[in-house]
Image 1 (cartoon, helix red, strand yellow):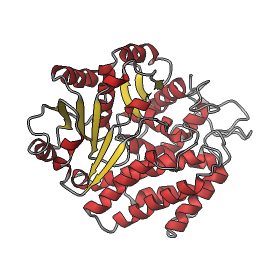
Image 2 (tube, one colour):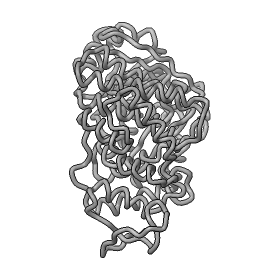
Image 3 (cartoon, helix red, strand yellow):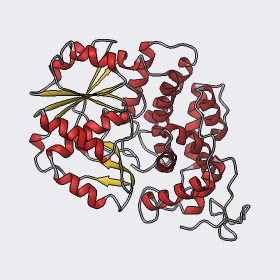
Image 4 (cartoon, one colour):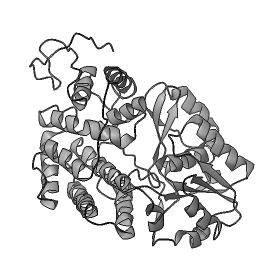
Length: 414
């Protein structure tokens, strides 16, 4: 999902190793550092320079839970912090963003608890005391999520993974240091580029035509060209460019005025990742081909086939060696970038994912409106290599065109 926000993030782009001597000038009052526990060298550089003497909390790079927020919130309160600096991947930055907001306005905790069962999306009300909001300085060590500038965050609750939206979740300052990306395994750089690419592509395919279409096409071409260049060489500056492109998917013009729920694949991939415990982009790699195939066949609830073809023609113009067919082309691009999906999707996983996707995002909700359980299980079955073909009402296809599909002796209950 994309979310417009009025809270403007100041973005700072730095050469490798500059952040430790720059961050101090961005802080306000008592400051603390929350950092991925695996980033010891980067942590030490920060606390040896501008953040010398600040309290430090180390977190595991794992999905954010209510327990995580209690830990970070306790750290904020115990140290009387006015500024929280976060260094890490999307989960660490989400933990900082959410804890900073929930700590200053405890009523948000009650709101989230009451509404978590209603859908996968939680839009937070305005905070009661915005002047007391903690300042956040967010330093990503990964590419793709754009958590440092986005107005959304993910939270795992007792009833499933929830997408939290608030204009106050966008960081006050986003600091992109090339050195922080230098230790990121290269396959995760490619996963991040794919995430940024699909954020733009998926939203454009699921939205109506816009005066900003050219901006979106140019941005995806830049992402593809950079990805192809990274297959041949690697450098801190190329990784920094990847981080900048990831940020631009949230802060640039490409997604202005789009349907905020346009990227339909995201909801299915998020549920598949939650059910299996896989990384989000591993789940995404499993479903994106089947989703695009449904769109190509005319299943308009997933997206517009003409806009998909137009968008992919822009990709082919930027990289003529890719297959001109979008379904084969996206699979080929992922293969070149060495991104693979789940090795196995069991029938139980298919059923659980279908059920949670409909419950959290479907039915009357706007995210997957018009997409039923059978369409979702059809995509998941295709992602599983056709292992699990479940029955649907006679005379229907996944795109609702009136042609029967193969059936299986198991019945999907919804």
